[in-house]
Length: 82
Image (cartoon, rainbow, N blue to C red; front, side, top):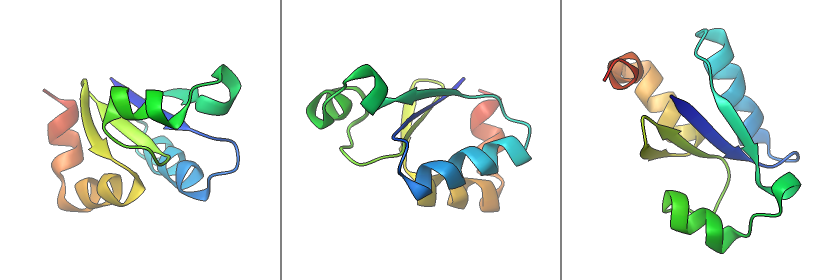
């Protein structure tokens, strides 16, 4: 299960979603603006205050750069299979 905490104006959020879509990986997007989540609340859930914050199988992996690294190294699919 993949969750992406995002905002509507975030280019890295768009890139993260595009990468997952290109790999046919389903995800749940949580727009923190739409639900009124503060950065402090985001930090309590994910350990990060910037967007995107990406959670894979209840483990925070960080943002787009981290997702991209996992994808390039082949570890993304490994994480998803756990």
